[in-house]
Image (tube, rainbow, N blue to C red; front, top):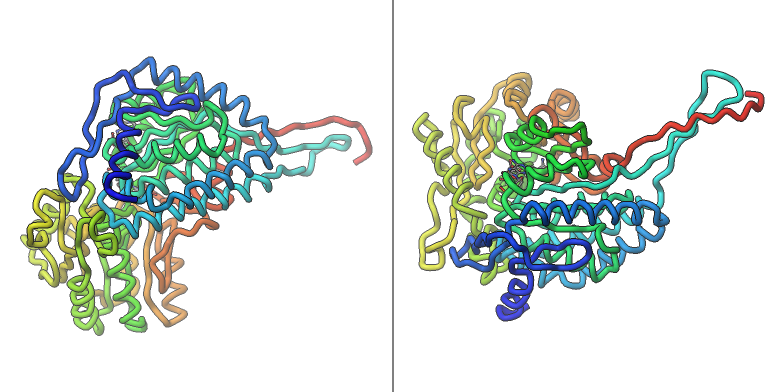
Length: 493
Ligand code: NAP
């Protein structure tokens, strides 16, 4: 896609809401959306007005009645069409994402292709949703446990993965027979609108998929409070997740996928080169703006300095660039000034408390970086548990490293935060692997790899990292109610 084609795509989505199967210009005020690599305004979104929100919920309720009665095969076919359309336009959609989010185009394209994969995964799952016949307490009865789609889902999503985090909720909703209203992050709305465009092309009926843009505190909160919304599927910060839980005025289903501060433990038996490679990837990919990013690394003391030197070298070797003009850069711009400021704060806090700077520590220098939110991948060593980087989510390209003497000490430190999303282990000793995988109080434990989430397995956090699951069969079940049908037929046992 050329620059002109990107500009045309953005202009088509500018100020639009997607309601009841078609785009319409929003009546509300316009909010600017900026390219974080340059600071240029790339378009404006409409802040959805109360009447538009009510209209959308009404359309979604109509869409739900129709969609939930379709055959599973019909829903599956629509998801396959959607996956094919998204994959076919991966480059165009990736450039829209990069323009608003900052990640390099090659990485954005990978995310779009994973969204297409999610469509096909859930298409297959859609046809295999079955119920159960369970034993009874009296002869002559049969109990059927059937699954019924929940209803209208409000999907409220963050800006770090603008396609996948919308997609997991969208695909599960479509597979289950729910209708969905997507409220994307204010700073990355155009990817969600581009997905809605593909839904229309895929022939998904009016009202089944809708996109409302605007501020979370207004549009998101209105959806949380709306009596016509049956489920909230939220991904975002722990603070906003808790706020949603506390301010929802009705009883409604919720999945809350929240923040993390993810540890990695590298034992003396580890393959150090593999651990360094994994650490560099999962600490710095997407500028560390990943809920499952490695924030802190505990390294066995005998290999501590060797690990640090190699990680510093790996961090220094990573390239930082404008994601549109340098599509193969390792890191693009950070998505906004906010995570960049937090990264600087956490770094300053660590250095003030005695941490040793191993790599990075500043924005890259040069004309290409002026006006954008750039920062070099940064490693600090000799970190203590009092430092913010070791207990709070930085959401930036900063990782803290500390030595440990016993596995028990490493596990205790690793578990000692309010979060429980993902953890990582590098070790070759089987006993160490078993002790660590049992001891880590996390929803995901990746051992000798750093890809904690795959489409087939449930993905969710513990403690302040959330409730409920996405991905896998468990993720799909979050979009169903169970109904127990107890039937008296009076025949024998
Ligand atoms: P955020 O500030 O919590 O925002 C997330 C979404 O909620 C945005 O769409 C936001 O709208 C909206 N929102 C804000 N206030 C709201 C309210 N009162 N009611 C309803 N919606 C509201 O999070 P973020 O900064 O975008 O994303 C980063 C966070 O997401 C990190 O903590 C990260 O760990 C977490 N995350 C978790 C996972 C996971 O799977 N566990 C995955 C990715 C990210 P606006 O954009 O308009 O503010």
